[in-house]
Image 1 (cartoon, rainbow, N blue to C red):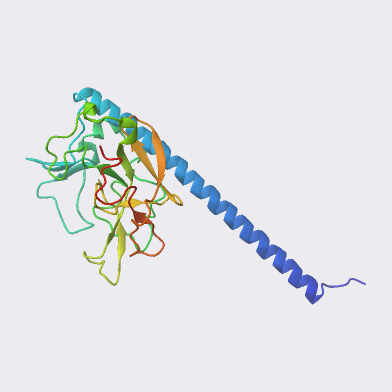
Image 2 (tube, rainbow, N blue to C red):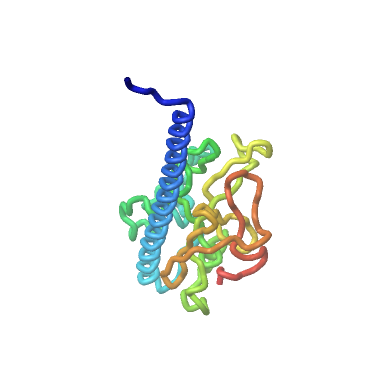
Length: 246
C-alpha cells in the first residue's frame, strides 16, 4: 500500500522549492549585474581607443562638447540636423556624424550602457530611441559652447581626469515627466555642479579616464539626488569641486 505525502512533508517540500527558487533568482541577478558591468567596462575601453585615435588626428585636442554648424548642431555624440528637430523623444540624431563616429564604426552600440534600463516605464527618451548613455566631461570639451577644448597637455594628471562616465538625469519639467512624475533620461554632461552621475552598477559608476584606463567610482557623500526611488544619481566629488575634471 502506497502512502501519500503528509501535510508536513508537503509544506517542507514547498519551502525547499521556494528557497531554491529564491537562491537561483539571486544568483541569476548577480550574474546579470556582473555581465552588464563587464560589458560597460569593455564599451568604455573601446570609446577610449576611439578618443585616442581622434586626439592623434586632431593635434591632441579634445572634441567640442557641442558646436553649431551649417548642417545643424554637432554634439559630441552625433549630429542633430538643422530643421530635423522635433518634440522631446522624437529628435533625430546621426551618431556617425559626431566627432567619434569615424573611429567607432558599427561598434556594437558601445555608446549605450547595458545597465541603463531603456525598457523601464520611467525612461524618458530625448532623441529617438537610445542615443548615448555616457556623459562627457564638458571642461575637456570647452563647456556648453564648445569653444577652446582642452589640449591633452593641459591636464597635469590625465590618469585622474574623467572623459566619459555613466550618466543620467531626473527630469521633472518636460512632458510626460512632471514634479509628481519624475522620469529618468539620458544625460550628457559631467561638470562641477550637476548631479548627473548614474551609479547603476550597484554602488558604483564606471568611467573612462584621459590616460585610457577605466575605473569605477562611488558617490561622494551628501551629493545624492533622491527624487527618483530606486535610481542612484549624484556626484563623484562635492559640488563646486574640479576633482576628476581637470
